[in-house]
Length: 236
Image (spheres, rainbow, N blue to C red):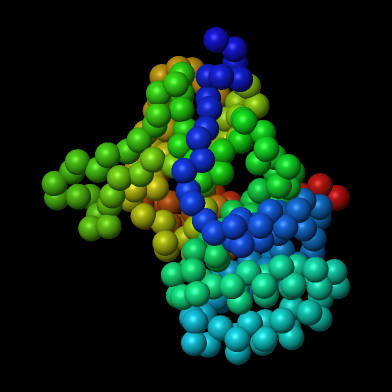
């Protein structure tokens, strides 16, 4: 077995073609350094209060403010079209998460990486052809919202080292199932002596992600990422 086949991925998350196209365009926008990453992340955070009834008003206000920044017109068009294609509040909620994932994909090279078999987006992870799952069998559950989990938001395997990411726009949205899944994944990788890193990504600050991970008793080796760190990943 070659190193490239030790860790493999299979995409299972299903999103609309409109959202997927928007994600790829956003990823390509952010594959080079952009000074407006903090402002983009601020929109992702603040849009928690956007809904199908106030969407046009909130979006127009954001466009007016964000448009004052240099080099944002292309991104504004992508974001505006994606939000206006939303049919309900759930679409808006899902789109915000996809946009954060798109920003992360951008920091890792843009949409082209998604064509690589060694990259998984919204995908199941297989280690030596065995799928990694977390089954919540605790009774009572450790947290009321604990549930089964079987995917990573983004995974990248270079044949020797793996990087696995969980994305939440707000750190407070991080739940037991995401932590426990990463525990299961990390444990399996360790049992096969596979080098890896686990990341938790948010549009909020690094400190807010750290606080949430501590609150959830996450493994100390897990690495928090906030908007500042996302900006730092980008090449000049």
